Length: 146
Image: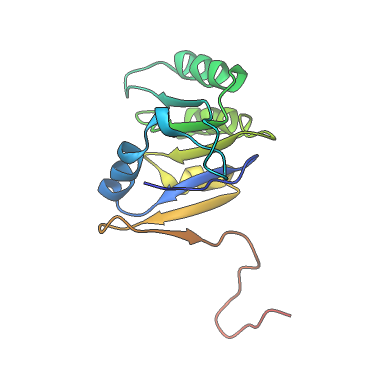
C-alpha cells in the first residue's frame, strides 16, 4: 500500500473499524520510504494492550518519540482507558509529531484522536483511502462562509 504522510503532522484514520485495521495491517515497518521512493526511512509501530497501565503506555509513547523513526504508526494505544487517561495518552502522542516525523494514528476512539490531529484519512471497506478535510468554520444550516 502506498501512502504519503505529511512530516510534522499527526494524521488520524477514520472509517469503519475493520477498514482502519486493514490499513494498519497493510503498512509494513520495513518498507517506509521517502517521498522520492529512493531512501528507506525508519518506522516504528506503537501498540498497547487494553490491560496496559497508563504509565506503561506513556513510557512507550515517550520511547517512540525519542527514537529515530521518521514514521510512527500508532495502533490503539488508548484502548481500554477512561476518558481522562485517553486524553493524557493522546496529548503525549501529539508530542511525537516533529519536523522530519509523521505520525499515523488508528485509535479505538477516532473522534477523541481527532482532538490532536492535523489531518485525517478516511478508509472504506474496499481498501480506498481519501483525505478528510479538518478545521474550518463550523457553519449552521443556511450560513455561508464569508
